[in-house]
Length: 303
Image (cartoon, rainbow, N blue to C red; front, top):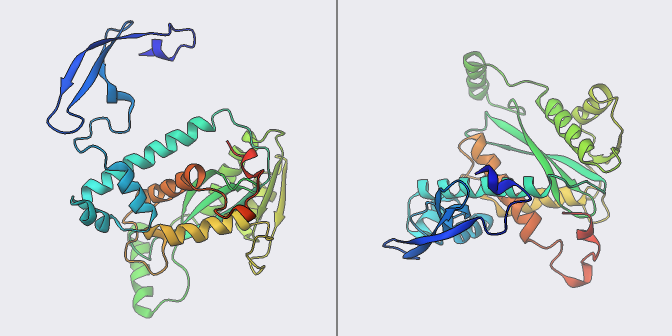
């Protein structure tokens, strides 16, 4: 109802309208009626558990996913199908994106950004991809990310080369400038979100980042500082937060582990797994667990 979105609406815009009953927990729930549009709704209408027949499994599924369990392992643990787990994770990922988009709707970035790409594959190793993500240098908060498909590279056997040629002829190649275009779009959004319209960006020496800034975004105020990938990836490294994010997701998410057999079966599933870990890192996991190394000013820069 559009009446509910108005800031000057009355404090009580609904009335109670009886109870509804169900055979499973919570067995009964309150029904309401809008005083303006006269529509009926239930208590769970604005909840994550809306229309869920099995109540209370979302926290467990989310925690097992963050602990590195695959979808089938989660399904075996809770006693349900893999399809059930997949649908719940997809729903959780959409809610995580909604939560972050609402929090950042009017937020202005007030810190430098560290930027990198997380390379992995979905469906098969002939479909690698790169998830570009921008993280606050001081807060460790992931502000934005996007997805770039890639063509397979590296050493291949003769059989693999022949199969790759067949796939390229059958379906075509991915755009070779996908990382550059995706980075360009992401940098534009970051500049708009920046308080002073000046983006201080730290990244590695990837040539696609430089071309996106020097050739495509010459009119924007972007201060680009590059760090060698050979530099020690410790706390003194300016790219520490993005390096730490990549390390943690490869440890805690089965789809991103090295030599995994639990890889995502399509790119959307991979983005959903990334979104779930991003929400866990942004809202649930502390910047540091040990008190003696925790930065007391870390979360002053994040939403």
